[in-house]
Length: 358
Image 1 (cartoon, helix red, strand yellow):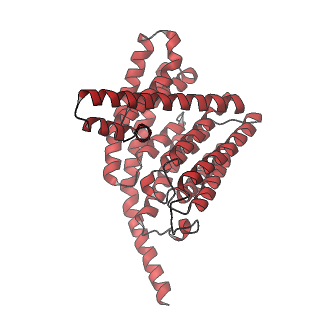
Image 2 (cartoon, rainbow, N blue to C red):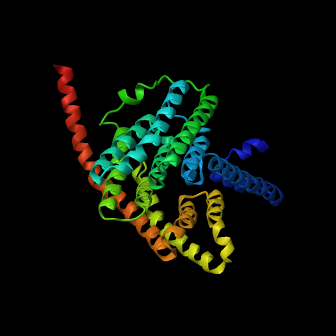
Image 3 (tube, rainbow, N blue to C red):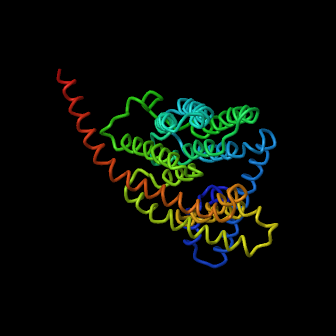
């Protein structure tokens, strides 16, 4: 494996490769390469967000993060359709990111639920045909971040310009990296293959309704940071039940442990170092190969941003509660929704069969 190829490995791949080495000398050499890769990633991310904020405003850091995550994800992930058609899908998704979160924040709770359902479902149809790529983790996260960190006036105009620039950058990266991959599926296939009897379609519907409904409930209950509830539900709502159960098992405890570690660091470290807690969380996430550890360190970044607005105690309690509520709701919704959807799919298939025999 070349130096460049090793830099392209994810955390799990790097750790697996290092564990396969026989001699301590080789292990330490490749541990150093792994740490260098983490340093490069963090340096690149910090530089990208800093430049984005310098151009489009500090309040648009969430938009910068959305663009950054999209570029990094679509360097490797494809949409399962022809590259030129996938490029169009990406541009449409960025159009949704520009309009959807803002519109849902302007509407009353009930209408916001409808808007979120439509927009998130469109994101799922346009970008999550190949469920193995987990593109929803990037694009729906971007949607929720933009909704949670809303802006208005001139800053919103800057956000639109930033997202337009990001859409072009992501589309260029996507097309360049995937143009040589051949697919028979086209843009039209994303919609013609929508079928209630398909496991993929059922998951897309469950995913969309889980997030939209949990945010509606959180909003009606007056829970602050409904974005956190939506992200928690999104994070555990994966296509396969065993994977979902595994994530639910770690989501709330991981955030609780992350909050405890954040509190310890907050009181033990000098006050001047608190502003770097988000960076510390990013480093920890970069070094983590498992979902449980990633959840712990993600809490650092979120709490570092929330403490100035909510205060230490309320921010920590809110973070722990919202993640517990979001993940528990996703589990309950899946148990209720699956049987209902199976009945609906049977009705749909029966009607379709009758139409074909007429």
